[in-house]
Length: 497
Image 1: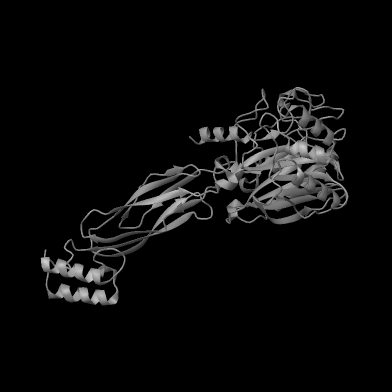
Image 2 (image 1 turned 90 degrees about the vertical axis):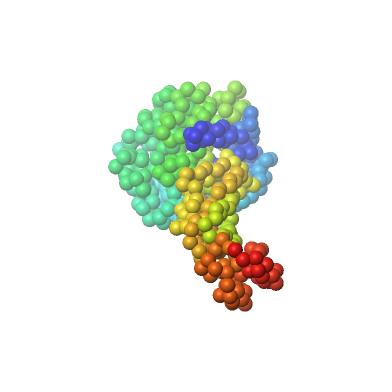
């Protein structure tokens, strides 16, 4: 059922109105500002209902000072169809080309930004950066994800590969410092021709401890360079001399983002990306603009099946004679739970059946995320002694609600004030407490002390409880102890049992 639902949601990913978290990485090719129209078209242009429309963009090859960042931010906020809620992360200028990050503030909070490792010679040539995000409306550590941004050393010599390994070592070392519960991903221009290269294996290899290992969400290892089998995931060059023949640009994710729980990749990480179509229904991951029809050629413009001619031309223009295509993937945000905070059985006769309906709802914010962007709510009940709750696990789609019958054990008299827990996948409220109240008394209301005889002892006990405002004196169970309860008791006392 989860896989079927996942595939349905994946189909929604092509819709520009989708509201999951779309994360994109883009080596934007010697960007010093300008190209506003091409940025508009590349990101917010639409073809057959498809549009890039990311929520986070991490970029490489920004040159100069913050002027280029301001231009790109201006382009994001002024594009036709843009929500106009884009902000730029603080720009950490490097000695050479720099990384930058942009995000939609209505959907994401930027919690921090860091230079993980400064570029140097003979080490890795450019800075590695990290940007920490959390979806709006969430608080738990499990909803935070760190996005690393990298532009590794180009070239295929042993020295080039060693410098890429140096960068991978720095990234993995920083992952080990992340707070418990955080997820992470890496986006950038890796300049890696094959998954067997040491730098790549240092990130994704089976020998890497599971809690700090990166994963290729489209499970597509191999020698990507000059290999037509990978033509649908190639990103470079859309207009360069080599044509489309390299998978340099990638997004890698932590294991916590491919477990289909909570904050997670929309797709099936156990299935390799298609080798016959760009429109793989098992994945939200895309090399934007590459329809796979131009292996070792310039990116197709006329007849481009993925983005059409207008967007394709804008992507080519952004590449300024060489360059790269952007890559994106979609994340689903965790479920949110809501339920009645208190259930009150009121006054219940000893030994009588007592049941009440408890409402549980999926409270994810549909105005921000819509159904495609929210995980289903899965939950179970943990009932204390004296309370009977359903034992089966339950699952609710976003926006749905369900009622569950909660029963009370009335075999013993006394006051009940206990807590029923709802255990769920909501990371902010994984154990939601529901207070359960009841007053279990004798079947005959007039027999206040439950000794089987209605006499003066019961009358004086009632007076004492009435004066103290004790809930047992609420004879009519209306939640208020007043004259109505006094006269109701007198009637019961006179009638006897």
